[in-house]
Image (cartoon, rainbow, N blue to C red; front, side):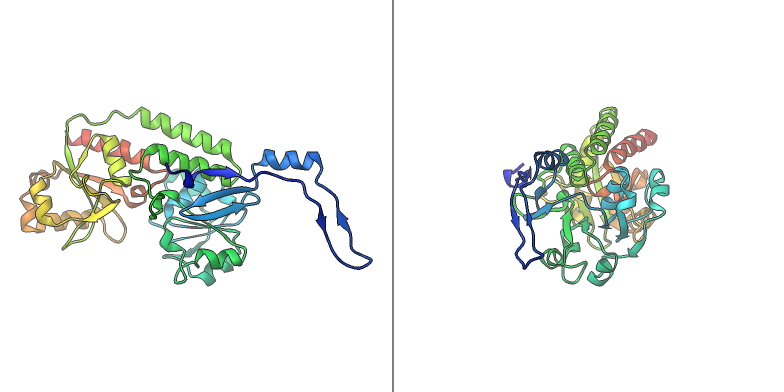
Length: 332
């Protein structure tokens, strides 16, 4: 991982702050040793190079707007639901384990919230799942929000800039991002527990050993959009023991012609189930398309299903691996 992405803690310092004025003015003395020690122990101020934008946290964020399911679910997993003042652009219902915690979170928008809607929630941080969420047409660009006193943080796995986009994404990186969030929100122990639990769950999974090839079919009819070689789909399939037919494409997602898919003849097809493009709709298209209807995987209905929120780096990835392995077992 590039050194530029490393996280560092700004050194606390004692200073004399002069408050100019008339007779009522005063001079603040140097910080006491106890105050300096407390600042160091708290882990703040904390400065992070996030997708090429330097963000400094003087204290743990208390009012957070989340954009995308991956960001909301990470905060719920860390027990931080009380700090979420609004969520937006949900990819689907939260997992059953988080339903209670999410019940009090206000939904600001079905899509990316406007800057007006975002600021109305009075956040001190906007936690975005994609860099594109933070634009003048969306929740507000990062520089403008910073001038308004609102910090911004993008899920690091979604960074697109050279030296920032994980290549490839790994579970070690996903877990590192959990720990970084724990540092930002002042809950490193909760993050450590989350990582420990998910590592144990991942280690307990026995990948399928049949040497099967797979297509990760996300969306698209005329030209399908599929999981490529360096993102979450590749990470999940590899951990499940599947060989991605688009693994040679150095991107997270890619377009792939039906002719190329037919030529690759995948043993199984992973279908992304989204409210706006369900697994059932994809099956209907595969079985109606003359070219794909002849594929042995389609004729034998060798389909595996993954919920859309599990397709992006986050707390659902390990569960997606376990689900694929279980579904492969059920296929025999």
